[in-house]
Length: 314
Image (cartoon, rainbow, N blue to C red):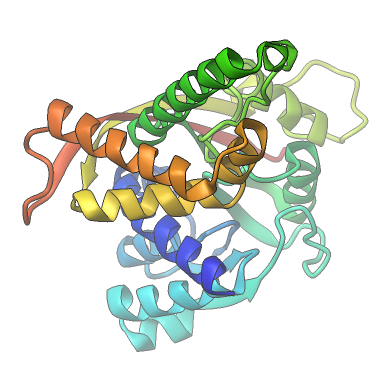
């Protein structure tokens, strides 16, 4: 339970970096000119974003803010009360623990808009898109975003790959038979879709069409209305608000769940040894490449990129 709570804290902290994407999603809703009382379903909202950003600028909307983790929902309630005030939060938001893959608690055609910021990396995309299409009203729309570039995770990936290769080389020197084993490839990037599969512009759009977006009915064999599926890329600076010790703790939490245990088993090493080596290299990487790292203020760690999909139900 303690590990789950710390992971929620970690993701909530990293989440703060992506405020430009929350604003981009909010801008899509602004452009739609949704009427008073229009209903929005926020899936995989984590600590209630972009729900809080949306209602801070569009307080006339009614938002159902959800996440699959109860701990995140509780963090979201606190965030909204702090950012919006208790009265607006209570009046305009319904919170719930909900899986995006199973929206059976909601009727067909009941939401004007559905949003999922950095959601599709974690779920069964075809199933989720089909459920979203079902609960949207005709003429309603969905807004999804995925990460394309995340400097923090790519640095961790390189460090882990280097450690694995070097420890494997030492292991092979002691026992040549080890060389015939192919070590598993563990991706340190849990918040991005595979670059060769889902990050291509056409992939999510193709799944969206299969779910019914761009068609009059889900079985309509006719030509897809391409204007109902829009794709936009967004670039922004990664403003870090963690110091060096904080980044090491975040990385340790990120790696503990699956990556380091797998490495330890494959390499015949203790997990703490791998964590210590990773922490040493991460500190050096940050100190060498980012001399302005946090000494009490925000600092920029490279560029982040996101892709935003707007999908209309005809």
